Image 1 (cartoon, one colour):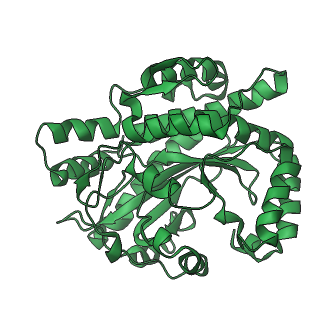
Image 2 (cartoon, helix red, strand yellow; image 1 turned 180 degrees about the horizontal axis):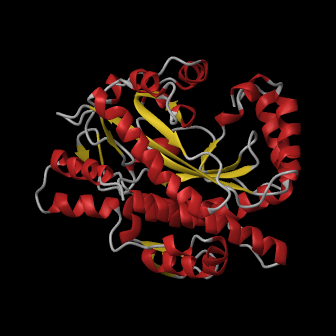
Length: 384
């Protein structure tokens, strides 16, 4: 992406369209963000540069990157041609990262927010990209001490990729409800299931649920306005929860909280992947794909932030309210035929309790945030 950033934005958009039109359907990549922790206190520590230096010359080097703050590290599977390959690589990358940081006296956390470490103590990493975001956003970027899971799905055809993004908007609340893992932040129990989403999507510009765009031309026209008016100077400043990636011919799903358990990462990736592919197939076959207005998706988005998998979601076609778990089960049933074809079906699981529910249940029992977070860190260390 570094070379791409050097291109004039007009050329970047032109190349983006060409890459989609020459792209490959249903490739996959998964990105996971981890908190860098002191092993004795489990507080955040600003040691990313040490982790990066330790990776040099190792297999993990090209798959390890910084992500805003020096107490965070991201690992990437790289492009995979099949879901089974991606599922195995998620486990492999976690093992590689754990082995890398152990000699440094570092442990890793993987939920959407750190429960107590102050945002004021986290340093922005010293790269041109993040220095620029610091200059542009100031307080907004300082507060963003959050950790997520992103899934890239290859979609052939620029217009088709935008149409898949349009369709995915509807299901962002379901994906968030399933992934919610962040009830604690700044030393308090927020009673939200995804404090991460409240911090990130409600503070950043061009974030959360995007509008519907009329093919690549409609998307291109909007991005051109942003560049021409000086609203953005990098394509990565489109922080929506789902977006057509301009450098890679993928649809990027960015809504999910980070997961302490690798099995739940695999399950989320399986649902994101199968859902994008199912929408693409529906478009190809002329099956109607619902495109509700943003204001209605936002109603479900708030429900997912507040109550996660324990709450209720609105069926935006019938306006029927049903349990979030039932909504997820309906969604899994809809995507299942494509998931079976693509090898993702064995990983499609709606758990008895997601990470947020487990943490809130322990808090109700009287466990401290420190005890609960230690349990989440321990879950991340048990890699199957």
